[in-house]
Length: 315
Image 1 (spheres, rainbow, N blue to C red):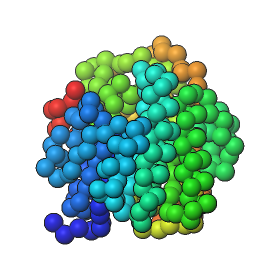
Image 2: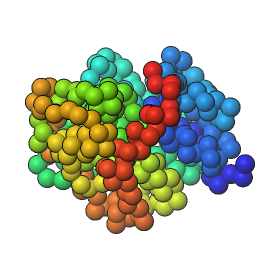
Image 3: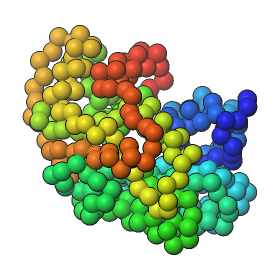
């Protein structure tokens, strides 16, 4: 395979939802791909890629382990997606700190010894906290969970290191990403799984709105960022800039699946840290990059159903 991306490339969090989709795209473009995962990681999303990548088992919160791998690889492109705490069952405070903050500090410090092309850190839309207006990269951060506290700290660390040392480090803040290989307990996979069985899952208020973006568009943006550095310490929202209500999503999914169900909203409580409205201000991202999301909600939901019908290894 002729490499379209010159490595070595390093990905953390490659066994996760966004990381695994990014990895699948990268194996078609680069012949030198390396991933760092925990020894106990559930690798169901990437088991079929084992012959195309180099796998390192490592605790990213242990600097000596990280340094050894970075000294060996000297990666040119680093995608940092390792995370913990975004799901309601991930409640270990020590792990939330170690994986979201300590790991970022260790990985970046080890990489700063070498001349890399770009370090792409992955933040979170939850860093913004409760906002009434579309969320801008320049907004004051008001984290409202331990996860968002340490994600915010990680973003600030990367931004400071980039600006102070003039190194190519950016942070991307994905909004509500959906698509193949998403955690099955999340809203859209659970909704589609129920509807295809002629059932409807518990639902929150129909008026809750989210900025939803399909995973393929997110991966496109990660790869777009590779080729354009717009200064140091930049942060970019990764969303659609469009809010869709829970009612919209449910009604579209029912129409696509043909399920004969009547949704009953409000049977599940919204999470305490959730906004009713949650939308990215995409003006800064669109201004700096020749990129816009291509896949609308209707198309995205159809793609998920097609994928689920063809993929028989769901855990």
